[in-house]
Length: 354
Ligand code: NAP
Image (cartoon, rainbow, N blue to C red; front, side):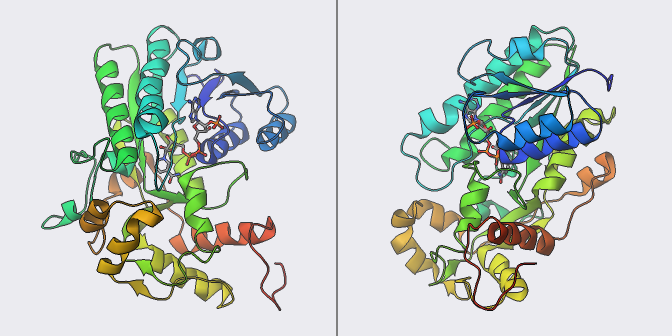
């Protein structure tokens, strides 16, 4: 990989991609970021600031996942393509085929179609997810931690459509990669990504997850729903390591450990006190099942996910990429502090800004 060649980052506006762009620039690379609308008046401020700070090394290019060939021009001359663009929506999605699966799957085929047609490209790093590895937490029963050898075989358009969208998109990526031998593919599989954001414009499920800790929606109790968690800065670094480590190959789980909304609540209470509506009580599974549809979950989801353990083995990312993980406590506290600083949450009485 020639480090002087430009690196293409798709979906550069995103929560994760913004950190990838920043780290690439700080490491001295030239970056081409694709965005759906490079002329939009808001949401790009952080990228414009990075472009000004790293003069002449960040350009923004218009591209939509569903617009065939849209990535070709920005990709010309790049050896590394980091494909992050894909919708991450939690809760009730009205039209999962149109809102999730189509952009994930067709978008991946579109980007990799251009990779096939761009002779300079040597490696693609794709942002997949742990949800392409594991579908429902009940799958954990009777087995050890999930590894890169596992695939999600239980999600569908009707049940867990976001995990389904990530699974079919990654499967398509491997299929396209295996049909040629000029470029290789490395996939990154983050757990739920939290930590400070470079932009307040992202609609990522990561943002909605943290907002639930301030809007009071968990005050009456949180379900015992476990998930892998990782810092956005570590996930971004993993993409760079996957791109520039010659031996990197195949799939990498990136998850610092497992927790739950109650676990996050405990960390927040320890760091920020009792003035916020952090969850204290575990919501009984039958009660959550009853109210689930209002909260955007199906009863099948509750049945198969609440009350089960969940563990991921991240050792391959440590061993082969040399990735180090921040403590979950710091990830969560740093994001919440940023929400206070950005005015997304109120400042409780008697508390001074740090
Ligand atoms: P995000 O902030 O919402 O970023 C998603 C990006 O995808 C945005 O830049 C968005 O562009 C772009 N995008 C969506 N639809 C598009 C379309 N039709 N055409 C072009 N671009 C489109 O979410 P994120 O959390 O950073 O997620 C980034 C990637 O990480 C996704 O692949 C997601 O599945 C994966 N991931 C996320 C997590 C997590 O916890 N956040 C965990 C595992 C994997 P616009 O700005 O134009 O909307």
